[in-house]
Image (spheres, helix red, strand yellow):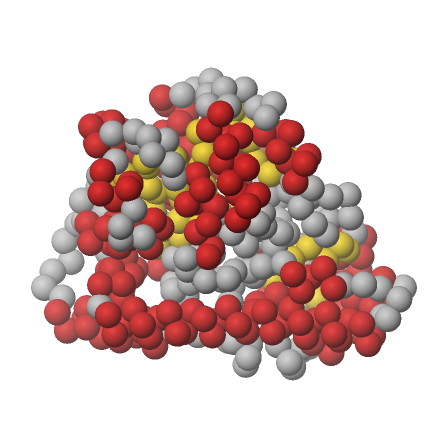
Length: 398
């Protein structure tokens, strides 16, 4: 039966990492996959995470299953991180949270939930978006469409076009929004623009599905939640897919969450019962370790303070690498203007490179970035690789 199978095309992002591993060039640079790197080019384990793990190991009593919806303390801390401890959604108890295997797992559970209960709803995502977004929802059997997001130069938000496109989406459809640090562009709405987006979304009767993968990597934990705060109005429904891979450095632990906000506690509990069905028929229940780390850190005042300090350092390093890239490119290719990268946020930016130039970077210079806009993982830039990186980019742009 399997002899008839063809090779599937490699993943547009993870496939580059595989090619990078096989590249024999000792000066190769990988800026494709979204993983934070420190100044030495390594992905660190946070001190707060290691201390939480030590405490968990000392206190561990068993390896039993978690409930279908996961670690209860983790769910409570996730909601507190999303909304703040005194939000109306918290006090009204109209939100439920299910622990998932990463943010991708949250997206897939949301997709299965929507397909089963709202099969005629179409999911609308920004153009561009993370390459896996449309694939996840299409794989679940949902219709997928896009709305306008960036300008023709791929350097700024085309807010009038975005707002106009949202205003044309049919009532009852789902609009996928990046809470902050837009992947792949790094281009975010302002807090004022988020208020206008929320007004249109709710007036049109759309269901917001917020992908919140990078909280704390833009301007700060509270500042990065401005879009979510604008959407989280009394009585309004939401789906939020959050990830703690980046801000806790827990990539391999696959720690995510799906939070559903209903208009009442009763509706929220009914929805949770349906989420349990979607989870049970998918992976049954989630793993313990990563969620226990997050819950431990966020539940302890000292550990949380340490974590926030470490998160700020990661954020500041990314911002510093943006500025270094802009300055170095100006010295290498003064006729080109890369200043727009300095105002973008988070790990990713569109470099403006064409697919042909991206291919040339890889084949001639062993520099790996993602095509369709030349997405660069800014968090992978270091003082050691900035010179060969910018030299290569200047060469392919000539």
